[in-house]
Length: 173
Image (cartoon, rainbow, N blue to C red; front, top):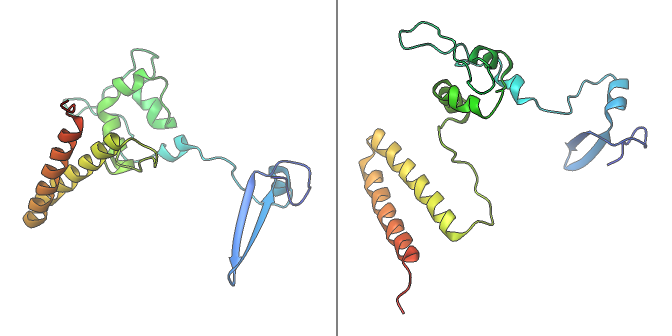
């Protein structure tokens, strides 16, 4: 999209306003936005979001005292990650596994991915995903002592497992 103001540069800021059911769109380049006195960020820095988040402070050791966790691959320490919100390498995920699990759980409300599933996935993958969601619902129902719901979910899981095993079994000829 080209900027609606200067008509030459690529628009990086896209605003949509709906007034009385009528939609109006404005596309502005960064230079025109600065010139007009608006401060729009054209990017989202996830590291900035994590910085200062509770749970990102230095990881406590076994005795409760703060110990320096250091990545054996890149040499980054956990304190640096807590300050800037970015890891140094893939090895940091292993080195900082325990404190990262806490942070991930705070950000995502779960330690495992339960987000959207693509529309074009195989039936088998969809079945596994659905089964995991049912198992998670069952776990929550048991925690909340909603035993009737838990029994219903248990039966649904059994049916799903039976279907899944039937599909996975090679057909007899």
